[in-house]
Image (cartoon, rainbow, N blue to C red; front, top):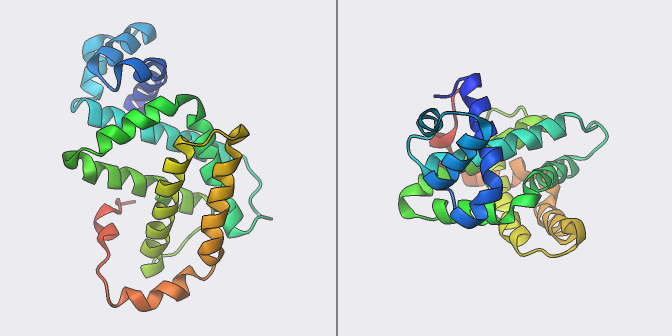
Length: 212
């Protein structure tokens, strides 16, 4: 169920669950407590997450994505280089989840289970796809996929780095992101550098691309 009303209710429940996830995980116990806090009947709350933990972590990832994109929409991007726009988007996402380190750890634990690996890939794809569209990418050829595959690697590595980052304001994570983007020649030459490889390899990201 992906109606706007259902998404709003999921967001309310995820926000209410986050303080308890560190103690009880993405569990029915945590969901029931959140339902009571928000005044949503427990049966209705459970129906919004029929698969349990996988649906809960998916909703959390999408909750974080929406907050990142909302903040990015209010930013002035025109004068920023592409790499700076990407770095800003990732920083805004980390700011959105900053109070919920343990919830992120619990999320990664759920997604690391073998049967949840496809879900983890899809959620990572959704995050980087949203970022590329938000920063103005309009590509439709093979670079559409190579850009997303490359940014997925940066985002995944940055998340693991962020989980161990004790620097003020996660400054070390931001520096890590900027180094990774610099290593990719600031993403500007991505299409040229990878176009030759396109003819030699299948692209699994095609199956993850949602219909728009």
